Image (cartoon, one colour):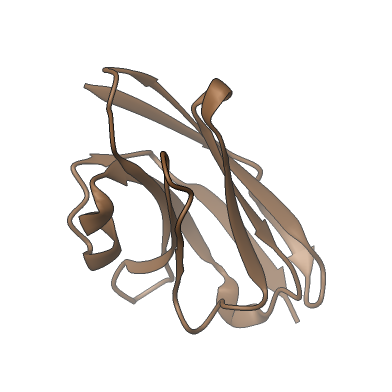
Length: 121
C-alpha cells in the first residue's frame, strides 16, 4: 500500500497563490507518476496535473496550464502544486494520486484524503 498525505490547502482571495504538498510513503513504486486532481461541489473529480517521477515529464489540464506548476522532490517522495492567479472556479478539494502515467486518464490506484482550497472572489 501507498499512503499519501496532502497539505497546504486553505482560504485565499482571487488572484492569490497557494502551494500544495503531497508526501508519499509505504510501498516503493518505480516508474510511477504523481498527480493532482480536484473535485468541486456538485462536480466529478477531474485531473489537474501530473509529473512522472523518473523522467520529470509534466501533464496539465487546459484549465490550469500557465497558472499551476507541478514539481517533485524524489528524495522526499513529495510532489508539489504551485497554484498562481487563483480563481473562484479553482475552489475544490484537491486530491493527490499515485500510479502509472495512466493517472492522467483517471486510472489512479492510490489516493490521498484531500485538502480543501477555497478561493473567494
